[in-house]
Length: 92
Image (cartoon, rainbow, N blue to C red; front, side, top):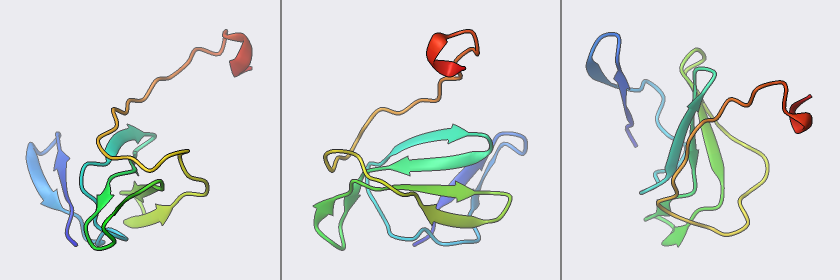
C-alpha cells in the first residue's frame, strides 16, 4: 500500500519509496526526531481496530512495528508531540 508524505521544504507531496507494513484507516499520527509515528487505526483487511504503533524513518526509508500496544484498539486518536523541559521532576 502506498503512503504519501508532505515535504514542507519542497511544498509538495511525495510517495514514500517503502510501502507501509499494513494499511490502516484513521490512525493517530505524530512526528518526533524526524520519525513519523502511526498509532492505532482500522485495518480493512483484518476487519478490526489496531492497537499497535508503527514508525517510519525517512533517513532509513523503513517502517518498524514498535513493541507494546495501547490498552484498547482504536481509530481516530488525537496525537501530538510535547517536548518536556528537563526541569520537571519526572524528566531528570
